Image (tube, rainbow, N blue to C red; front, side, top):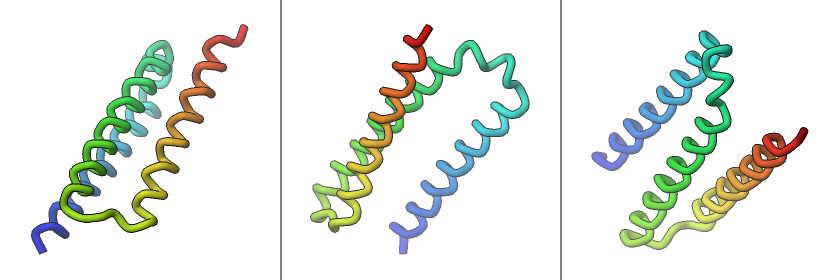
Length: 93
């Protein structure tokens, strides 16, 4: 039961952070535009590190089921694709 509550709290925290970021982006787009790429790269790195640490900690407790490993690697694939897109967009004339 405690694990379920911890998971729910983690989900609520993540969802709140995402909505907060979206709200800030909607309220102050001109102010945030110059720092957008730096902000996205930083957030991608933080998410990747946090996701990897959580995945490794859970692997110590038990063997991950197939869909957990699949989602983990799909997420890394999405982060890599976003990183490539940002790089190409930044380097484009």
